Image (cartoon, rainbow, N blue to C red):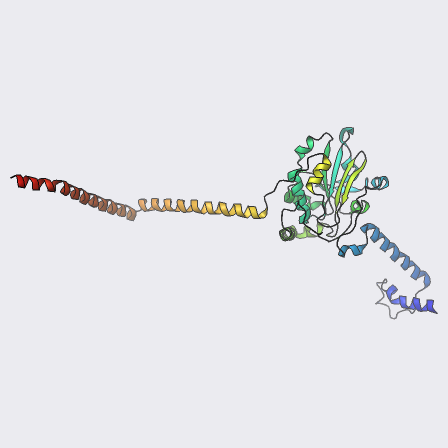
Length: 351
């Protein structure tokens, strides 16, 4: 009896699986046991697939930082991801193994940076700081050949725009399926973290405004940036495996630039300060003041030339010259009177 009551209570829930439920003239009082079992198994498989794809409990999306392990992936995991496709700027597919393979059969290293969606201002700031601190020229002087790759979770159509915004000199690829993110243990969260990292030279409000502006400017491409919940990390591949990795715990948890420099064998110096939006405003305002002052000078010169070239201007010049000549004559006569006056008095007294 209790089993029969449970089946009856499950009827409305199971009927939602049938899109033609509303077209039925009546609702059947009880579905057969095989039908209920089939849909129950299908629902469990779908939920298991979603959880394995997300790699974490979906409730973590709304509960701040998630404790993620930085253990390197296993050899079995690497064998799985080696055949995953990624797309370049021309939407051409490449296997992940071909990107991290060593050139000329030499021992080499590849630092793969997984970013968030292509409109993320935090990741854009990270790549700007990384590009100014670790240049391709600096990598050439390392004893071990080293290269850097960037992989995003959006569509490859947005790679050219993203490369212009970040001025990143390193190749950028896209993994729209996010299979690499899931298999390598990267999570999904919207947490900002406890503090702002050092590589963020823009304030958070300005980064948000820039991201919104880029999203609006992209038009239809606004829906191709990637999953906003997905966060990335950094993986250093060498000798056919992963020697070091870091998985982000929040949306601003990329590895700091000094630590990345030490990891690659460079010094631990901080990245140089870049020209931010406020410095650009100050520079543009000073240039505007200089241009206005120069423009005022040019206006005064042009006004003087116009007055000289016009008939009224020539008449005024003549009047000024005549008045100047009269004043000069008056001053000369006054000076002559001063010098000749005492001489006449002397001559008169002598007479």
